[in-house]
Amino acid sequence: MKEDTNISNYCNFDSQLLTTFTSSLYIAGLIASLFASSVTRAFGRKASILVGGTAFLAGSALGGAAFNIYMLIFGRVLLGVGIGFANQSVPLYLSEMAPPKNRGAFNIGFQVSVGIGVLSDNLLNYGTEKINGGWGWRISLAMAAAPASILTIETKNLPIEQMDKLWGEQTVGRALVLEENSLGSSGRQ
Image 1 (cartoon, helix red, strand yellow):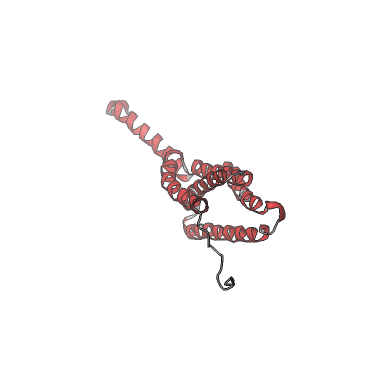
Image 2: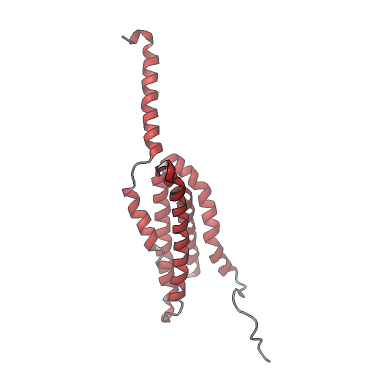
């Protein structure tokens, strides 16, 4: 029987586990971005960025050290959670902290950085594809720890959020108004 050399084997897989592995990151990222807004509202943008960075770091470690497909899938889920949290909270933080005339540039800078990260990841995948001994995919998955480490470690160096400052001032202002109201007009001199 003669084989057809014109048929490409690219994406010619019919495996539910492979499909789950591939889609788990995207589904987890979508779901996590929906929950990230509640976490951001309750605990602040820095906390949400830290959760995203930590999940991304754990996912890359799990992916690089995986010894079965289920560990790989769980690692991809954690990567998706990290992406969901970071994509929700980082642009919000940048918009809040950037000077008003530069907000658009800061957010476009974030999107450009994401694009550069995707390009770098694809180049890394291309470079590690031919590594002998089956280590290429491990290196590729574990290298996600590089940006995750930067995101996680540098979160502590971020300045306090403007909304936290504003909420703090409003809380003090409300407390003064309540105090004045409780004292009534006789409390004033």
